[in-house]
Amino acid sequence: MTDAPHIMIVAGESSGDRLGAALMRALRAETDGPIRFSGVGGPAMRGEGLDVLFPTADISVMGFAEVVPHIPRIMRRMRQATAAVAATRPDALVTIDAQVFSAMLARRAKRAAPDTALVQYVAPTVWAWKPWRAAKAARIYDRMLTLLPFEPPYFERVGLEADYVGHPVVERVASLADDAPRALRDTLGIAPDAPVLLVAPGSRQSEISRLLDPFGEAALLLSQRLPGLQVIVPVAEGVADRVERTVSGWDVPVHLMRAGGMSAEEAEHRKFAAFGAADLALVASGTVALEVAAMGTPMIVGYRVRKSSEWLVRRLVNVRSFTLVNLMVGRKAIPELLQERCTGPRLADALMAVLEDSTDQHAAFEEAFATFGDTGAPPSTRAARGVLTAIAQKKRQPPV
Image 1 (cartoon, rainbow, N blue to C red):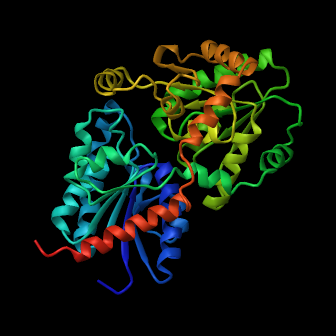
Image 2 (cartoon, rainbow, N blue to C red):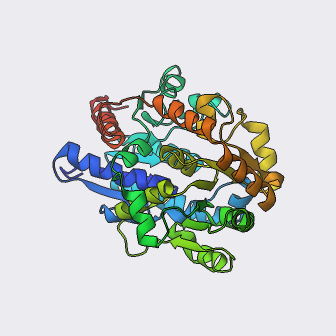
């Protein structure tokens, strides 16, 4: 091992790629010296100098039925990542989200490189799933970095050190210029008084295949009620070609926002500007709903999974909502149209209802974001300090 710290970061989702890139920048700032990064990431982490084993897209699969066809590739990548840990013995392995892949890799790393500090960034949602997941995490990781303030106690009570670092959406919104949404409208040629619908159908191929058609039908139906409607569709590069082919056939003006040729930071700023430029949003369940809420744009959430995945989720999940803002405020301020209810006509009706009265949503946004509080430092900085603490504690442990 060289004097320069070596940190291996594995991000299993596009949102994790953005977290990983911010973490890399913060680690450089906190160490104020040379630092080596290797692992699994996307364009944001590559832009920060990650030595890439393979791209995030290779393991970004969601849902039991969706995972099965890709198991050979995922296991091949698992073996590759494990071999890299064993060969390089990094000071820390930071796994970001992608709970199943992350836990499997961390267990193998624990055997292959016992001196490596194992850190999970983005806690498994033990408050939504069965509580045994916290005890399972405690047997694997050395430290947990959580995005939500109420998460650490779940892990600390089973003996796993956990740091609340704050949600990155707060950091991203704070860095956005106040006039960015208006400037984006000008750039796209959208009149100040034109109604704008943001459509965010997800970043996975499985999400696109199930959501883009009903979302497109909803946009068309909404345009018939709102003359002059413009649609903005920010899209992840991994699904951009497929989305572009589909939306080109929509009978409504569409502004497709691809990130090609932009830095990850530029693309992220433009995406948040799009969230703020819209009057309404139709989004897939996930991080994007919280990001749109941070920009104060009223929305509805639509989502579909395979029937086999739906059965499994209903058996295991212990919450009544799949949208974080709703969970944080304890009511369904954001309508969720899931499975058979996720159809064009129903989505359009729900969007019109929200447009007519979004008072409760705006109140819920303020209430939810107030719970994050002031962490005293940006989330990425707090996460970097958590990783460095885990490394220091691991080095002080006596050999087993």
